[in-house]
Amino acid sequence: MAKRQFKAESKRLLEMMINSIYTQKEIFLRELISNASDAMDKIYYKALTDDELVFNKGEYFVKVAADKEKRLLTITDTGIGMTKEDLEKNLGVIAKSGSLAFKTENESKDGHDIIGQFGVGFYSAFMVSDEVTVISKALGSEEAFKWKSKGADGYTIVAAEKDTVGTVITLKIKENTEDEQYDEYLEEHRLKAIIKKYSDFIRYPIKMDIKEQRPKEGSEDELEEFIEEQTVNSMVPIWRKNKNELTTEDYENFYAEKHYGYDKPLKHIHISADGTVVYKAILFIPENTPFDYYTKEYEKGLELYSSGVLIMDKCSDLLPDYFSFVKGMVDSEDLSLNISREMLQHDRQLKLIAKNIKNKIKSQLQSLLKDEREKYEKFYESFGRQLKHGVYSDYGANKDVLQDLLMFYSSREKKLVSLNEYVDRMPEDQKFIYYAAGESIDRIEKLPQTELVLDKGYEILYFTEDIDEFAIKMLMNYKEKEFKSVSSGDLGIESEENENKSEEENENKDLFEAMKSVLSDKVKDVKASKRLKNHPVCLSSEGELSIEMEKILAQMPDNQGVKAEKVLEINVNHEVFQSLKTAYSNDKDKLNLYTNLLYNQALLIEGLSINDPVEFTNDICKIMV
Image (tube, rainbow, N blue to C red; front, side):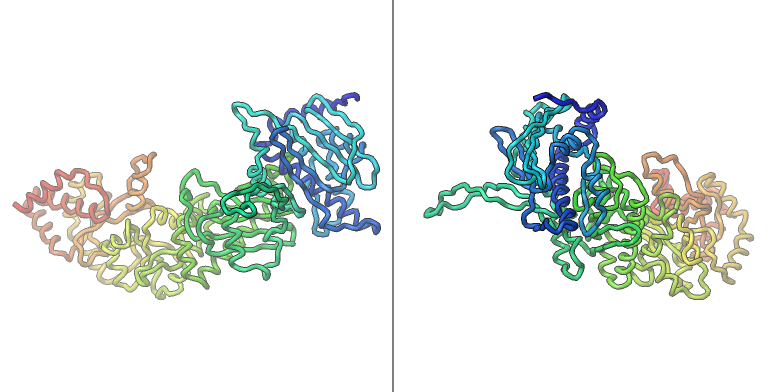
């Protein structure tokens, strides 16, 4: 029996594949089962054109069996089998795919798809075995043949005995090493787990002999072991069923079975697309934030199947970052896979699926906001921050997609409102969408800067998260209404009262210049406030960087000391202003004291730290004395 050599290029490919093409050794079982499924599909296709051949699906299955003592793992199928020529052609030349050739010749879709295309999956068996034996009998043949190989050294083909049509592949599992525990591929529970993970939705039964214990007959205490053949795969995936056959409970059970989360999903999206690209998907919007969601360790992505076979656990290319909270799966026959079937070639089909999924998610969220407000607010509590990050990131490229999904707490409604709801009820004379930023709703409600806007009867949106103002700065406007901070230099609210305050500012120009000189570079200006009514002092800002943004940037590790351009505003109608005027006329030291106190008071109102707390307390003591 002469040993045959793999062709030189095939030998190199085999060595490379065993060592580097596949990232996980467990993939070998997925590949062998997929090949077995292909072999049975080929009989199905032949039966479509051969009246003498009857395809009875109940006769077709895959059997996986392990013999721990002999270290043998066997995969048996009742598929079309291989002739001696097939064995030579398909197993003697690596990357010669019989499945691809068959698929090209038999383009009938009919609900079936040949999984294997590259012809290398079979050789993944050498990652876990020292020797592979294939015994096969082809449909319509009286002879069976045995192909045997220990890897790159070559193979033999001899006549063999086999009563039934189909193929038996036997792997001699490697011995354990310091780095690898090959014993796991002989363990019943491990094999079953791999089958459930990758091949659960192969359309044919995958059978195993499962050992179980039951009470011994005539005894309640003694147990006896028995072996029962069981089908370990589900076969019919939920996404291939009609939506009207499924209940909410079915979707929730699938969510739990796939370990998408420990919560229940707020909403599911079932997609069956038959357009430019054909695919099916089930997506879930979770109720709660995963514990690691806002960390670098969190991995986004959907499970990706090709004709029911799991290709990727988390395909990140199917979800934009701002929708990274979505869980679920996609199954398509139209994907272009690479040689190992573990990764995608980034092609037009993938981009089309991703675009469609993005639109479906947005549409579902808009529907929740409109029709199931309580559910949407629950969702927003968990993932609203991610939507705001989506507006801010990529230089605002996604702001048009996300702006209608944003919500903020309203001074008027005392609850979360959308930007659309805010704009729809704006008075005709209101020019801007007003907002106030702070650490909490309670702190914002006490801000002096809100007085004038609220007195005009205008609604204020409260920004309490560090990302809020950054996102809005990127958004710039909504429905042609510009955003305006209540702390900005110009509120755009003109009145006769403000004109009077401008006159006061001109009359007291020297006083404000003296105060500005005392504060030096701490403020850009000191002026009469056009917004204050009851409070004596506040800070406003000029330029793009607000005081709240300065606070947030100061907490970052790479903080470069960027400061907002602050303006100290004085309420000229407050009795404190009279004290300032008197001090300016009679006692410059007291003016310095009052100026520093008012500036530090304004800092405290904003939640900013005082530069010198000891000096501040000493100044208070001077006032008391």
